[in-house]
Amino acid sequence: MINVRSALTSIIVLTLVLFHSTLYTQSLYTQKDVDICNTKFKLAVDGKLAAKPINEIVVEIGRSFIGTDYAANTLEKGEKESVVINLEGLDCYTFVESTLALAICVKNRKTSFNDFLKQIENLRYRGGEMKDYPSRLHYFSDWIFDVAKRGIGEDVTQEIGGVLIKKRINFMSNNVDSYKRLKENPKFVEEVIKTEKEITKRDYYWIPQSKIASLENKIYSGDIIAITTSVEGLDIAHVGIAVRKQNGRVHFMHAPIVGKKIEITEKPLTDYIAGNKKQNGIMVFRVN
Image (tube, rainbow, N blue to C red):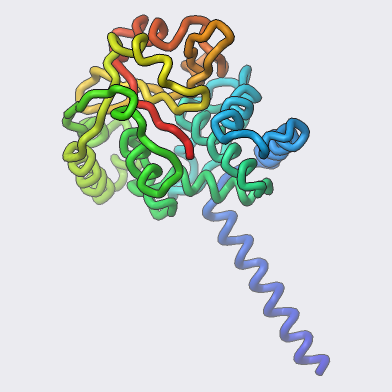
């Protein structure tokens, strides 16, 4: 009996070691990331955020990141694709993604770091499953399509007055040298081209810059704002979160550029976009 127990104990220990080893190889993060995540969850508990509508939770969690440094290329770590977490520095995409993942965890009352990891994977990868580099939702219009299909939210652009837009998407495949993983893996390029063709075939709607002001009253605080671009082959240039201020105007909470920190724009959203020649409109995604 003692030998049987010993054998069972060895099997359990080995299983746990293998389990943690698998998690480690699939995820990259630091203790600081765990601490920041837990701080956000404590903020949510103290503020009783779980009882609030999801869009309000998104705004409150987003506000807690104000002042965080902008950091570029934080996902390009390791030799293989991993669920990379870096809450000490965020770019525009990882800011929105991290805020939304935390908000969903809070609303579902599942507030462990592992719950957060699962939500990040669910939001970052096609079908919610990390496979390899091409499974990441690199184009934000593709992100909108995929997560909406899975019921996480809804592309409300057409509903609030958007018009049909058609554009050939091929920025990544036309700029392979700018993407280390694509340069090293020709097979990945083929998969990315296939995705780009699928995106190009879809019907998407956008609100041109000239119409944003007149439709601003239909945008909610907590909506995800994807800013479209005139850059050839590219769909979305920048993303952030809508915040309606006391003056009634919608402003833009975002991670701006290298050297800046996460902020809410002083100018309303429409004026902010008008100040950038390559930003020509928006898509609006509403979290369920």
